[in-house]
Every structure is written in C-alpha cells, then in structure tokens.
Length: 471
Ligand SMILES: Cc1cc2nc3c(=O)[nH]c(=O)nc-3n(C[C@H](O)[C@H](O)[C@H](O)COP(=O)(O)OP(=O)(O)OC[C@H]3O[C@@H](n4cnc5c(N)ncnc54)[C@H](O)[C@@H]3O)c2cc1C
Image (tube, rainbow, N blue to C red; front, side, top):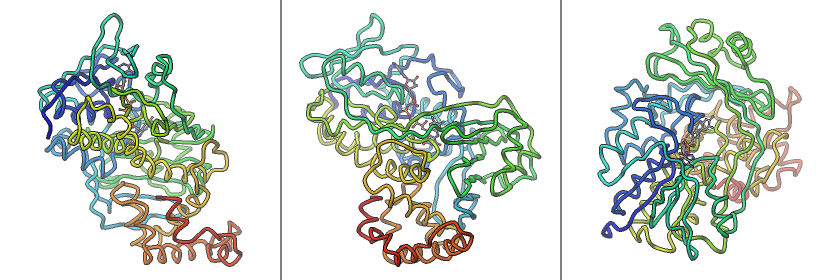
C-alpha cells in the first residue's frame, strides 16, 4: 500500500459518504465529511435522508461488505434490535405465487435505516482516527482551478482538498456546480416511474409470524403496486405500500386495511388486523430513477468523483442503493491501493469501473420497470427481452427451487444474472415458467415461451441474446 497522502473531503454523511470515508481513510492523511444536517446523537430520522422512515432492505452483498469493513457491526446491530433474516423465512409472493424456499446463505439483517446509519456513523468515529465528521455544514460551491476540483466552499469557509467525493445523494447540486465551472454536465439516463411510498409502523403481535420473517407481496402485474413488511427494532413491523405511475396508495390507517385486502395473499392483511399501529403514515414520492454517465465524457475534472445516489439513484423498490454504494466504496478502495487520492486519472478509472457495478442492477431494475407499459425513458439495450425473461424467472421461482435459489442470489447481488443462464438452470426456468404460463395461456393471459418460440416471436430468446441483455 502507498503512504497515505493528501486531504479528502466527502460531501454528505449518509451511507455512501460514510463508506467513502472508510475507503479513503487508509490512503489519505485526513478525511473530512461535511454534512448539511445537524446529526442526531442517536438513531433518529433526519431531514437530509427523508427516505429513512421507509422500509430499507440491505441486500446480502451489501451486508457482507459492511461487515468486512466494520467487523462485528452485525452483532452490534443485532444487540440494538435488528432482526437476522434467513432465506427460508422470506414470504415472497410475486408473479402469481409464493417463491419456493431456498437454502441460499443469506446473511441479511432487517433494521430500520436510522439505526443502520447511526451504527455506521459511530464506527466511523471510533475506528477511523483520521476521519472527522463536521455537521450543520452545507456545501454550496466547488473550488475549481485549471481543470481540477481543489476543494469545496460552505458559506464563507473554504475546505481545500486533493480529492472531493460527492455523496450528497439524489438531489446533489455538484453536477450543476461543475457545469457552472465550465465542465460539461454528464449525460443522464432517466426512467420515469412515479413511485409513491406510504409507510406505517406497527407493534408486532406475538401470534403473527416468526420474528425473522420478511413479507414481500407483489401482484402479478406491476399495475397494482406492492407491499413489503419488515421486522425492525423494538418488536415492530415496518409496512410500506408502493405504487407506480400515480396509482393510488393508502393514505390513512383505514385505507391501509382496505388496500391490504387487494393484495394477492393475506399475510399483510392478517398482520394489520392484529397489530397495534404506531405513529402516522409517512409519505415519499420519486418521479424518476436517474443514472449519470460521466464514464462517457471526454474531459473529466481531476480531483472529483461522485458516488452512491449522486451517481445513480435507483427505483427504491428493488433495494439496490445501499449495496451499490458499498460496492463503489470497495472499488474506490481497490483503486487507491494501486494509485493515490491525488492521481489525475483516478476519476476516469473510477467511473469506468463503477459503470460496470451500476450496469447490472440498473438493467435488472429497467427490466422490471419497463414491464409496465406506462414506464417511459431511456431503455437499456435489450430491455424488452430482459423484461420477458425476468417475468419468466419470477414465475418459475414459484415452481422450481433451483431457479428460486439462483434468482434470490441474483437479486441480492451475490451472483450475476449469468447464474440464471447456465444451461441446466435455464432449461429448468423455461420449463417451470412454461407450466405456469400454460395456465395463464388457458386463462387468456398470454403465450407460453414455447408458443412464442414456435411462433417465431422469441427469435432473440437465445442464450446469447438473453446473456447480452441482462449482464
Ligand atoms: C423511499 C426509498 C426507499 C429506499 N429503500 C432502499 C432499500 O430498501 N435498500 C437500499 O439499499 N436502498 C434503498 N434506498 C436507497 C438508499 O436510501 C440510498 O441508496 C442510500 O441512502 C445511499 O444514498 P447516499 O448516501 O448516496 O445519499 P443519501 O442517503 O440521500 O444521503 C445524502 C446525504 O448528503 C447530505 N447532503 C445533501 N446535500 C448536501 C450538501 N450540499 N452539503 C452537505 N451535505 C449534503 C444529506 O443531508 C444526506 O446526509 C431507498 C431510497 C428511497 C428514496
């Protein structure tokens, strides 16, 4: 490893910012995290992270990466009330049936977002001697000079830096600041989804499910939204209802009960009937998922990179954001092992490799989103095919344990989509979805995959084509 050099300023002390600081701390002399909010001394929701009061699922890969960097944090979170979840305890109703239980090793914790962030923040403060978190400090300008970013400005105070890492989230203004400083703004791929979230917390009734149970219910078609119910600290359930494209979401306690009756399985309705509501209904709306493409730019300023939601803000229903942020932080750490925070080529190398990290979850999300014909925006190449493949995979997972196992691993980023395309798995997938699709066909819903093949409509449904579309 190189000798630690220079100063790094991180904008934003949320998940991406804390992990970026962890990555930089071993390679820089000093790391300063500037956060706009006054940070609470305990695990509390805060203004700068409005999504924090909604259900957050940390995928298995993200969980493993965070544990690797902060050994023992899983145990600490469990002591604070986070609930370990086993794969077999997932009640996952999607594509018209329950996903078959899988023996996949899924080291997932169910925890509220403020507790996760608070635990990470404490570990950054305790473990990383050269990292300082300065809160109540809003970055409102970048210090730019001769093709490089050389620090940030917050009010009248200037913070010089050899590397600025923007982790200020979905609403980042850093790209606009760079634009003003004369650097062309990167292309943005946007997918219009109009997601609405409504969340309420309930005290868990002892008669309802094992503690480690996570319930996710999605109707066969995207059109009617979905519900997810996760156990969190203090013996509570957090229940989130999500809809797309302006479809209704429940706005009150009573409306939640009515909405739950419309779901295709009754776990959430039963829980609502027995549980004791706590607090008000929380709301969140997101118009588009958005991916910046700095890797396509010819000229990039040195001394600046963007990570986490500032680089790509996903459709939240797939639970990808925190895990992608963790992957990007690990990437940064690997690159810094080989170069340094002052290396002029660091941004180009980072964006090029980060694009590969973002690509798979972005395409998987697009495959899900564009299955709804109301979705508009930039379609990644092969999305139509990937959407149909995903629908098949989800259906097959209700009938074939091997497919269920692989699909769960892919969704938790423990395996790439190629795991579903290995010849035997692909055969099982096609066969299981055919049986299922035949029932749908008889009910007039559509053609089975073999009908499509025979009719010549699935000409692209070859191993290679699917492979290119979803990888
Ligand atoms: C409704 C919803 C549900 C979600 N569910 C999941 C889920 O289940 N699983 C999952 O993995 N991800 C989920 N996500 C995504 C996840 O919240 C983010 O990916 C994750 O928080 C990483 O984001 P971030 O750290 O890049 O930005 P954020 O969490 O948005 O944090 C940005 C930080 O920057 C600070 N900041 C902003 N501007 C400035 C400034 N000018 N100066 C200083 N500080 C500033 C903010 O105060 C904040 O602390 C969800 C998102 C939403 C919206």
